[in-house]
Image 1: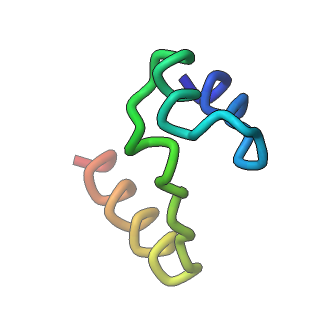
Image 2 (image 1 turned 180 degrees about the vertical axis):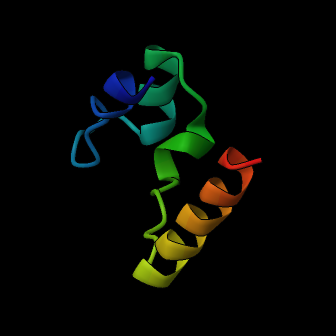
Length: 55
């Protein structure tokens, strides 16, 4: 889906809604941008992963 999502052209004359319909993707995903994860969160995720892998 990300390949299709990359094809959306926000400057195009066709609305984003119609582009999504043509590409067969959800309109809400066209507006959503992935959030950034800070270093502290990444470190916490690594610790949680290590905890569960060691069990």
